[in-house]
Length: 389
Image (cartoon, rainbow, N blue to C red):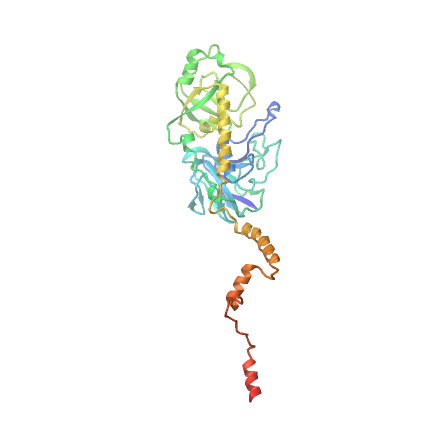
């Protein structure tokens, strides 16, 4: 039981938190571009925090479900529909076997995420992760993007009910992403080669707006804007490249390294984007304006702790009791032993609920002044008449 890909979208892959511990061997971390949308999607369907999701960019896929399950969509707005009807984002949605989920081109943002209850699709773990490494062609689904006809089995065969489904929704995250704003600000931790830039170059980087270009993908974002001045060029002996590192090549315009980045680089890095602000950056479409703000390491760590606390609060929120939070089957299973125990204690041969139904049919024998008439066989009258005759 799983889903069938009817249309793959522009670039749809399976990603999780990433593959760590292998950069020293030349393998990039991969993983989701927008960790915030990824975490919230899994929270909404009560998956494990590291469960894989479907990540799609620019235009989403069309998939058909072959079993009952529950899903959640987060990230950019790709105008999702289920069997032709609009689907709410940032909410858990029950789906029946045979239903078709469609995504269109993005109306806001660049990346969307589809999380499926029961810990998502079943794919093998490679080097500690289920993320897709497109360059090395391993991980995810056969090491590639999804194509027409792919069948992705689910980790859980069927999900017919999610407790407290009505609480598994939030109001969206537009305030954080700033989809309706022409310009956003992302925070940067200076270094490690900040001393290679002149004061004028630093003032330019932190004081001027830069524009996202069409030269952007999972490896990195090239920005256009004023040139950042260096003291004696920006070439260095290659060293490690972190997620969000801001490299400045010889042309003086920044390149921000992302999930599928190379493990080392030979350009000076003026700073590193704070982890909490990377989702805002990757969701900016080409032509979006970005400004940079300098912060310290301690402040960046405090922001990360605040984000972790936010996720903890969301996990509690989506599990709060709601009107539709009780499964009829589960309720029946819980009530049956209680009623059977009650019947045993009263030494009755039937449950009280069955007894109530029977009393309505034959009358209440315990009611004062009433004696239910004794029923005679259907042919009793005929037999009496024949005997008299």
